[in-house]
Length: 412
Image 1 (cartoon, rainbow, N blue to C red):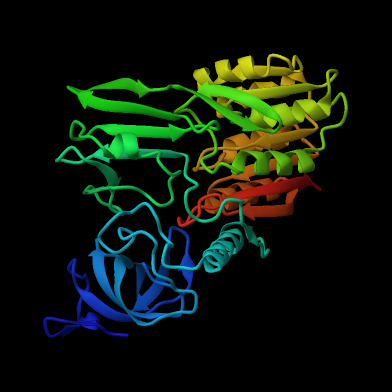
Image 2: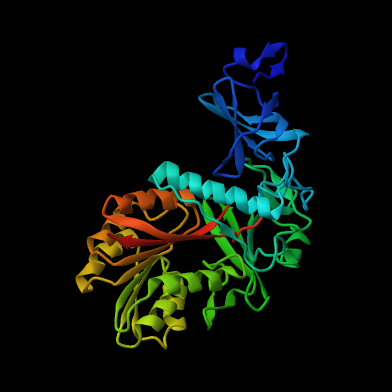
């Protein structure tokens, strides 16, 4: 396929200028919210397109090498499942917060399922199809936590995709209704980051962070202590600390983790990257008062909140520190029956996985917000005699390319 610009074909160009347009056939979906096309030996990652479409794509980034990036600015042949984005800013050159608003809900989940399968195959050698399950509540009005930045004019918004320009938001259709009103209705110091949270009781919490002379300052403007409800408990925590963004995600994940963990009465379990103890509470209920659950979390504020929230469960003990450092010493207290881990987007990494397999738990339940990181860690588990026994995936971030997975890994 060749594209034409200034009398030259793409075959004659080793690198495209930003703004160059190419007429291309769109190929498979790829991890990251775009699709793959190939033009004369080079890969073009195309946003705002769908597999099987023919589009006019405008180059947005080209640093040379084997690939470049583009936006589909005109659709010449639409794919089944293409819809009009519900947000006028979910278009090329505007807000970078969403990836798939131009795809019908069923197609979005299908595309995410393809990505999960492709990452497992390519990075872990695991051939497994999966279904991305819908969470209650629909595609819009689900996001309970957002971080915005103030542009030069002081208006709060989100940055464009892979850019620094701030796109001011009058509102956001994927946000919980009303959550942004106290943020977008005023002007802020340019460059300020504004975090807003709607907790389980629908109360708003607003925090501003600014940088001056190399120092970062934080002001809590509204609220600060959130109340959440999940796994049959009420949770009190820092409103801007870690908690699942989708209102239905915490309960859903806790149910799956509990079903697969199966800690025996009086047994032992580890909850790594424990946050405020959501999964630890489930594991403790299974282990009972004669059991033991060790929760490991690096954020000391979250540890304090977890200790307070689970004060009625003396079988839960806490370790404050980075998991990769703490986990090396945990085995001295005895091998766990099961390990649960919910690492950040980058995954657990080889050191943590090898520390887990060294104590030889029968089962590992791995909660992952990035399928590529999950696949890399599953490959490490496989190298030590553990295999993927089950997998579920959830559309916990509708309209974006993100997907939440839970993997059951078993020894032998």
